Image 1 (tube, rainbow, N blue to C red):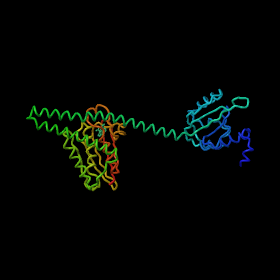
Image 2: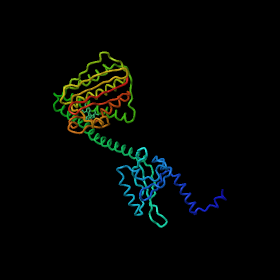
Image 3: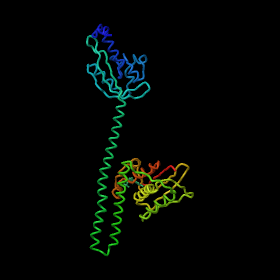
Image 4: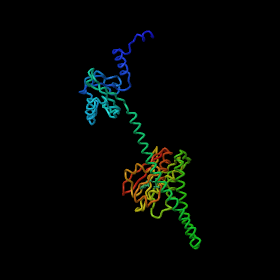
Length: 369
Ligand code: ADP
């Protein structure tokens, strides 16, 4: 072997050509050459893999065959540069394979000169960057998602501060007034109770969101019936509203289910509370229940503000609230639906919403039996 290599003349032009040919054919990048009219004059095996044409069918064809319609102008620009002897480096673009598949590529194009130095064509090195572009896109999307969540979080902190300090201020004021007007003590105590309940609810929601984030929200399954479950939730909410009647026709043949009844009642209470909060002009909320062999379904329908399609997609996201006059009037931190969805999903169920602005919303919970 050593003897053989000693006899090779590496600067000999034939050897040089053989080395170049070996590099071109084993390259992972597509290497193509073309003349100044765009006619393809060489095509390596990576080009075959990338563009799906074999050498016989592509040699002599015009390079424009690989260029999408809307990018044909790029070729004029490239030819213009090449004629001036200018190299085009790492130009990101798209090309089409024989099957019509679009490929993201990075192109480097260099002029080819003859022995007299005249430019006679160009060599193109095309690198498939589809994976890289897809990854960048995914990164951008998750960055956008993060930015959005950050904005919701900032808004949340601002509202949370307000939501927690308002009841505290009221409690403080009531305590001071109680000493000035002792005869009104029962009224002040009632107010204090209302405000502390409000704070307790908020703090409980906050703790639930933290549990969800840590993956620590767990179910405690017990046996209950659908009518019992719905009636309990309705009773709790009905007690605290004077404006709305919650209508429910119990199932004629009630069904026993294995669920976390406290958590599922919490989910229903969230939906019922929202149904009342976001239908100030209405006086009823309708709950219905149904059951088939595989699932039971509970629907909470209101006749209120409704939710536009754009917002329907986001309302289950943590801290998301629909902005506008309604949000200013109605207290809330955008945690209820997020918690509700988690509870339903922990039961391997799903929640969806159908709504029309101005007509009302129906939230549908579907849980496997
Ligand atoms: P909160 O009510 O505390 O703001 P939720 O997570 O329960 O938070 O709801 C998120 C948002 O979805 C609300 O801010 C509201 O804009 C919208 N929404 C929820 N339920 C209804 C409903 N029944 N009708 C109209 N809008 C609703």
